[in-house]
Image (tube, rainbow, N blue to C red; front, side, top):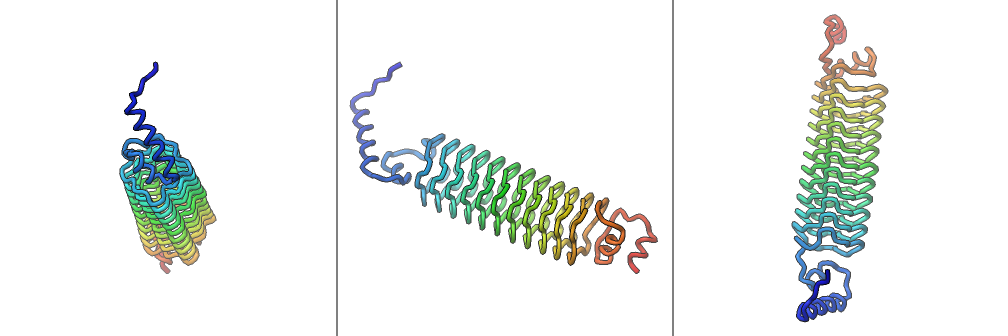
Length: 298
């Protein structure tokens, strides 16, 4: 079927095209103004590869499924934007404001999100592998089942965030704020958590095999069912932490604070180690032998 366009509409279109061409810019914010486009409606599924969006204001825009590969979006105001299923791989989103943005199922592989504001953002099932999230604020964000393998999260704020079932294998979380975050059944194998704040975090069922938790703050954390085999917890603060059903085979707790830490059904430790930990203030809830308890307190 052939659609006809009237002369007035054709002239308007030609004027619009000429205006964009004469502008000689690849800055989307300028093109949007020239073309009179509506960012809340006109960009879903758009091809914006390598586009310059630096400092752009696009709050609440609809960019579902858009291709923004290698785009420069540094410092942009993108609060509430719908980026679900969008391709943002290798894009520069450093210092951007993405508060409450929807990034579910988005491709953020190798994306620069350093110092970005992602408070309460939706990142469910997002691919953040090898992304740079240093200094980013992800407080209250939902990263459930996201892939963060190889990402750099040094100094990141993930307080109150949800990372249930998330892949964090081998990530850098040095000095990160992870207090009150949920890591239920998360993969933190080989993760670097030195000096991180995990106070009152939920790590039940998490894979922490050979993770480095040296000097980490784990006060009041729930580690029930976690696998800490080969993990390093030297100097960590486990005061009041819950460690029921934990695997501590070849784990290193030298110098750790175990005062009021609650242990039960622990595998991988010998009676001598158990005695040492009790003397350091640990509580073994399943220790039924009264004579052994009395001996431990001597």
